[in-house]
Image 1 (cartoon, rainbow, N blue to C red):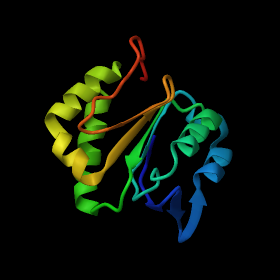
Image 2: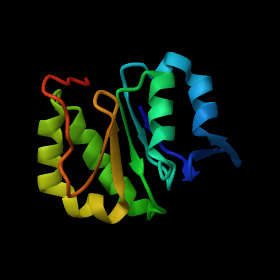
Image 3: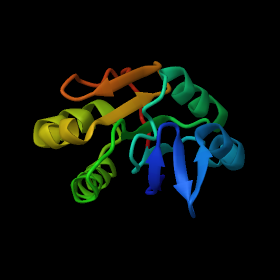
Length: 139
């Protein structure tokens, strides 16, 4: 689920109004269940890890990705397109992150791409590899 909005810490901006992650989780309920949620917005996931994992628990989301800083629109759009194209080709997230890191690590570092996994409550930032448990299939 790709959510492209303006954002700020812990919030997305909808029609000029801020909606925090907890409210979004309440609105979506289990609508994100067994999905990867990708916040294509500035700073939305620049919050304490517990808030991210609470969001994931409430929505039953498998992974959450997004940017931890203000981002340039064009740079983030380019990375979004590359990530969305690549991720649909992989069931094994370790293989995805290995491929994505090998090819786009520099871009991911510049825009502050961060990923959280529900299965083992881990967080990954490039250049560190993402610690996915064997057998984790997200798609």
